[in-house]
Length: 251
Ligand code: PGA
Image (tube, rainbow, N blue to C red; front, side, top):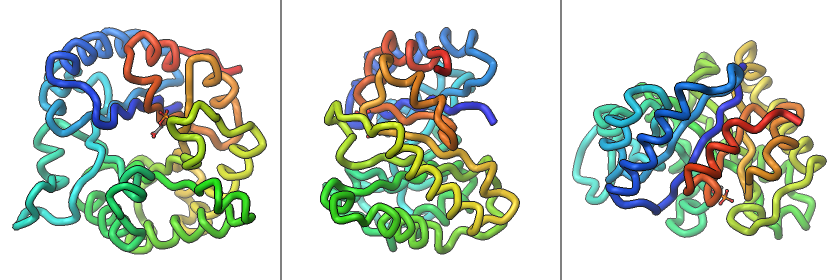
């Protein structure tokens, strides 16, 4: 399985910046290490220009979607609209949406199932807060999130279409990266869950790590067992930094 190196721009970049970056990213994609794939999760307003510039060389995704084909849902975007803009992927359940926009696991579960049935590849984000970790709730939190977020996803979901990003909330945008033992423990828990929930396929589903990934620490992270890629926020905003991450050797 190739490593998926994914950029999450969050709410950054206007059209001109998105256009410049995506042209550079397309160049980078022409010469990737053979064990790598790249994905870009861009704001809705930049998706079309990115799709035009990337020309399919890099997987493109939205950062959210609404679980309905169309309707009176002011401000929302459907999976079909993302596909129409050239997306193949969508992020679901990012901790910023859980914490700031109030999304709960029941709603995230609807999004996962609907986006998959609409033909998008889903990258489901999960992770514990510092308080939950300190209370010894790591396993309980990850298993609750996975259980509820994937409740309506059929057992036959393909490994290609469903990936999980483990993003401990305390490591996102804080500069505090989880240590190797933390990442190994969480990813092993997630792998065991996926193997139980999706017999035969769970072992092939990608598990990405996210949270303060940088050019300086990515080599050690992608060398860990059950780490099949990274989801990068802050350090993906400059093409030079993201390029170093994408090309980093495995330590
Ligand atoms: P960060 O964000 O790399 O800035 O910590 C990761 C994410 O939120 O996906």
